[in-house]
Image 1 (cartoon, rainbow, N blue to C red):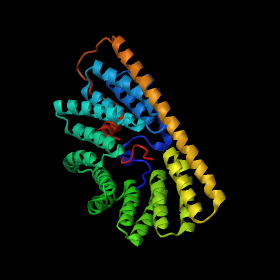
Image 2: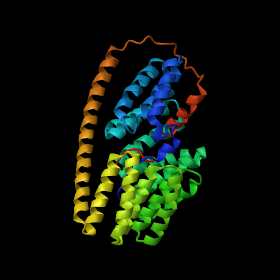
Image 3: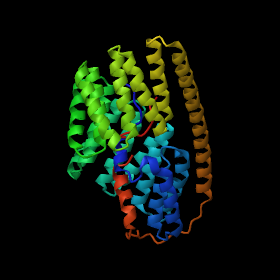
Image 4: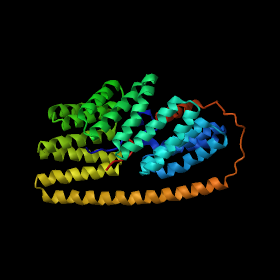
Length: 371
C-alpha cells in the first residue's frame, strides 16, 4: 500500500501545518519577553516542533536549548517534553534509532515520577518511529501498551487516532480482518474530527485489498468532501491515491489520469516531495496504459528528478544532523549555567497549556513521508 504522510496526531497539535512558520515567528516573540524558565522550556520545545515538516533540523537546535534549560532547573516534565520532541524531529529526518532513544529517555523519567500520561506519550513516539521504519509488529506492541491509558482518558480523538494507526499497521501486515476492525472503530470514534477523512481513506484501502471495490469507492467518496471542508491536503492526497489504485485495478485508465492529476495538484499544494513523486509515478502509469507516450515520458522524467531531489535532500539533512550533534555535544561540554533554585515554577502561561496536552499525545497519525 502506498502511503503519503503519517500525520494523524496533528489533530492534537497546536501547530497547523499551513501556518507553522508564522507560528514559529510568533513564539519567538513570546520567547524574547518570557522570564519564567519553565515557560521558556515549553516555548523552545514548541518553536522546535513548529519546524517539524519543513525544517526539522532547524527545530532540533531550539529543542536542544530547551532540554539543556530543563535539566539545569531540574524541570522534569519540561525535560520529557523536549526529549519527546527530539524523538519526533529525529523521526522526520529518518534517524529512527535516535528517535527511539530519545523517547526511551522520556519514558524512563515518566516511570520514575509516575506520570502515566507521559508514559503513553513516549510509547506513541516509539511506536511512530517503528511504524515509519516499517517494523509494524513492533509498532503494534507499543500501540497496545497505550490503549488502556487512552481509554481511561475518555478522549475519543486520541483513541480514534490510536485505533487508526493500529488499523494501518495491520493493513500493511496483510491482516485485513484486524485492519478493518480497528479502522472501523477509528471512523466511528472520530465523529467530528479531521481524522475521519483519513480513516475513510484507509477503510477504502482495506476494502480494495479485500476486493470489495464498490464499498471501497463509496468510502473514498465519503472522505473527499470531509477532507476538502477541512482543507486537509494530507487526507486528500491519500484519498485520490486510493481512488487511482482502485481504478487501476479495474483497468479504467481514463479515470486513473483524472484522479492522479487531482492527487498531484493536492500533493503540490501540500508541499510533500514524496507525495509529488508518487503522483508523478501514477501519472506515468496512467498515460503509459493509455498509450500516450509523450505524456508518459514527461511524468517518468519528473518522477525521476523528484526522487533524485529527495535523495539529495536526505543527504543534506543527514549532514546537518551530524553537524548539529557535534555542535550540541560541544555546547554541553562548555555549558556552565548557573543553576537556578530547584523548585519547579508551576505558574504557567495559559497560552502554553495546549503544548502540555500536545506532549502527552504528541506527534501520525501521520508524521514521516514514506516513499
